[in-house]
Image 1 (cartoon, rainbow, N blue to C red):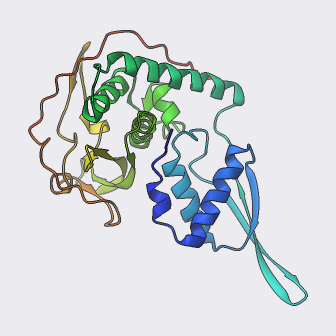
Image 2 (image 1 turned 90 degrees about the vertical axis):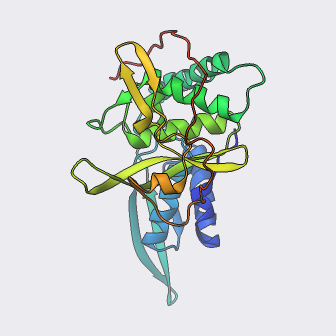
Length: 270
C-alpha cells in the first residue's frame, strides 16, 4: 500500500529526516524514541505529520509526550530529545483490528463493479463506511481509522483517516485535511476531512457530513462529495498549503453504485 505522505511534503528537509526516523522506529515497535537536536516545535510538527499521513498506524496516540534537556560535554551543548508514545490499543486488540481492516477491503472489493475506475471505488468505500459507522464525539478512541472499521463509532478525524487508509489501499491518492468547520453557533471549531485525487484532479471530500440514515434505508448526501474549494469555503477553513481543488464536474453528480446489505460484525470494546 502506497501512503500519500502529503503532510511530510510540507516539512523542511531536516524535519523530513526526523519524520522518517520516527516512522522507522514506530514500525520496528519502538515507542520510546531518543535523538539529538530539533526544537520542540519541529518535533511536534513531525509527529503531527506522521500521525496524519500514516493512518495505518491507528494505535498511535493523538498526543505524544516530548521531553528535552541540554547536555554539556567539553564545552559543547547538545539538545537531547525523547518522545514517548503510548499505544492506545493492546496487541491482542490490534490483531482483531487488522482482521476488520482485511474484511473491509474484501467487502469493498465485492461491491466494486468489474472494470470500475477511481470514482466507483471511492463511492463504494464511502458507502461501506457509512453502513458500519456513526458519529460519536464522546469517546477518546474515536479519532483513528480503527474507530470506524472495528468499532463503528468515530468523530471527524476517524472518518477522514479511515477514508484515507482505504483509498490509499485501493491505489487512490488521498490524505487528511486538518482545518476548521463552521459550527451550529456560527463559530469555527477544529475539524478533519479529506482531499482526494480522482482522474488526476483534486477534490474536497467530507464524508462525515455526507452521511444520512433513514431507518434501514441509506442515502448518500452529496453536498460535500468531490466539491471544489469555492463551495467548501462556505463552511470549512484550511491553510493555503493544500492542493487547489477547482474542478466542478461533480457538483450536480448523482451516483448509481449500490451497497449490499451484508451485516458487519463490530468489535466489542473492553
